[in-house]
Amino acid sequence: MVRTVAPMTLAIVLTAIGVLHFVWVFSPWPFKDVMTFTRTIGGSDDGVMPPVPSTVLVGLALIGGAVLTLMVNESIPGIGPAWLRLVGMYGLTVVLLARGLGGYFMNSSAAVEFQRLNTFLYSPLCVALATLSGTVAVAATRR
Image (tube, rainbow, N blue to C red; front, side, top):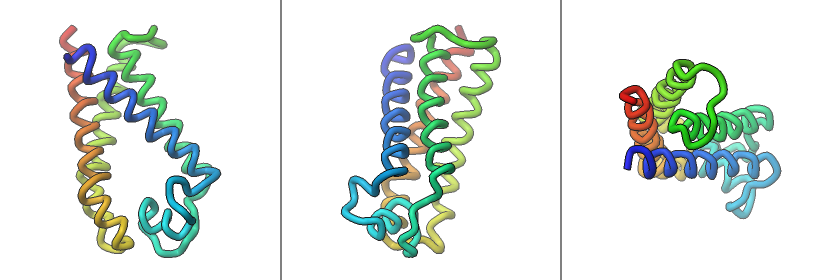
C-alpha cells in the first residue's frame, strides 16, 4: 500500500489542485463569478483575483510535488541525487503540514465562506496530504 496507494493518491490530488490553480489564472471556475470565488477560495470580500504570478507559482509547486512524489517512489525515473529528492519530499511534508495546521490562523479576518471551507476542507486536506507525503518519505528512507 505504501508503494502504490499513498504515492499515487498524493500525486493525483496534488496534480488536480495544481491544475485548478492554472484554471484560476483565467477563470473563477467552478464559481459563477469572481466575488464568489474570492470569498470562497481567496478568503477576501474585495472581489480581486489573486495575482497571476503567485497563482501560477502555486500551481507549478503542486504539480512539482506530484512529480517529486513519483520520483521518490521510483514510479518514474529520478532526476538528481536520491538524497536531494528525499529532502524535497520531507520539505513537501513540512509545507503541507504548516498550511494545514497554520490554516486555522487564516480564519480571523477571512470571509465567512472561506472560514467554513478552510476549517472543514482546506486545512484538513492539507494535513491529510502531509500525512501521505510523510508516509512516502519515510517509506523511501527505509528502502
